[in-house]
Image (cartoon, rainbow, N blue to C red):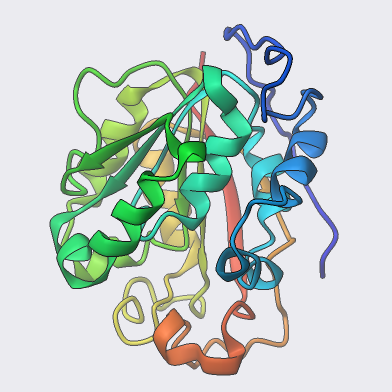
Amino acid sequence: MRSFLTVACLALAGCAHTAPPAGSSTPAATTPASIARAVVEAPDRTEADRALDAGRHPAALLEFVGVQPGMKVAELMAGGGYTTELLARAVGPTGTVYGHNPKFVLERFAEKPWSERLAKPVNQRVVRVDREFDEPLPPEVTDLDAVVSNIIYHDTVWLKADRAKMNAAIFRALEPGGVYVVLDSSAKPGTGVNDAQTLHRIEEQLVRDEVLAAGFQLAGESDVWRNPEDARDWNSSPGAAGERRGTSDRFALKFVKPR
């Protein structure tokens, strides 16, 4: 269940990624696996973040995305910034991370932890982006190496976002060969978006179809987050899951913008 699987994965190219200068906190090694391990094992990460690692599998996520020093990446609905900080550590001082949040999320729960997160020196290369999902990134943000949607695609449903418009905007923001990684808690086949608000889940096939319709190609998938024992009939949101938090069956899909 925890083996890492990448199918027909397309390598990123066209970006110059150089080793960080001496004395930098960025990992010297530049393979995705070594960078991921160094990021997750960084001694200055908070205990609150470390407590989420078992259910989030952050090293596997960074490796799946293929994050390297110097990259330009974005996270959709960053929330309090757990994943954004991981990305910031991985791209290092020569990279850039755009952390997106819509107004509703900021007002309801994310403003304080997000602001505190961004004040940390390790996140100095994070650009705060307050925008709605329909156009999640400013028009001047282009040539991104990767965009990450980590367990939030279902939220775009109950927030009534125009997902076709959102995916098209992400397509435009990526450079050719750039990747769009979507992870989310899976709903039962045939349910579509019916469980998006009640169970915080979405049907995998629907996500595949919507992203492919924007012009992307499927480049890879992973079973790291799969849990065949999940009945997919319970609310997987952090506030409702309780002891089952982090155990929902989750699909992980990597899409690529064709060259």
